[in-house]
Amino acid sequence: AAMLGKVPKVVVVVCMLRGNKVLLGRRRSSLGDSTFSLPGGHLEFGESFEECATREVKEETGLDIEKLEFLTVTNNMFLDKAEPYQYVVISMRAALADHQQPQNIEPEFCDGWGWYEWDNLPKPLFSPLEKAVQAGFNPFPF
Ligand code: 8DG
Ligand code: MG
Ligand code: MG
Image 1: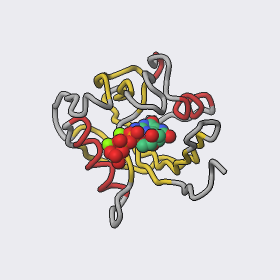
Image 2 (image 1 turned 30 degrees about the horizontal axis):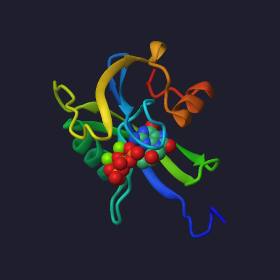
Image 3 (image 1 turned 90 degrees about the horizontal axis):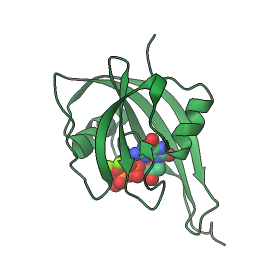
Image 4 (image 1 turned 60 degrees about the vertical axis):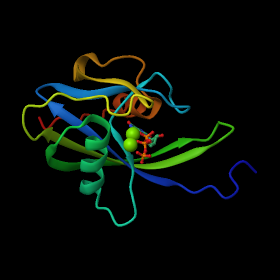
């Protein structure tokens, strides 16, 4: 009954790469509160994945991005909740368009953004990101 009328949603997340580091923020959300996740959000009607990635990163961090590339798609399910969710998550990677610092534009949803070495990621990661990393996901092109 909890699933009645529920539909999967499409989300685009972005691995912002700078050297050997990736941009993560600590979530303020009923889903994965206090865990570290990538910038991103829901695909709006009529948007390309690239447009969504560019918009969400700008809305959440103020950053302008370039060199957007598709990485992978995952089916992220949070079903063991009073309010279950399912997200089809398009993961992209991107670089900074020029030298810029991330700003915490949505402090109600994020404690702040920081650059983290891929080999020394902060804990706890948001559960679907942790699962992907465990499975060998790596956004770097080398
Ligand atoms: P929007 O209203 O701006 O479109 O969405 P948002 O407020 O930015 O939503 P979000 O929580 O950032 O992203 C939507 C959902 O996507 C989130 O609740 C769960 C799912 N999601 C994952 N992995 C990740 C991830 O690494 N980062 C983000 N931001 N969301 C993720 O499954
Ligand atoms: Mg978001
Ligand atoms: Mg957003």
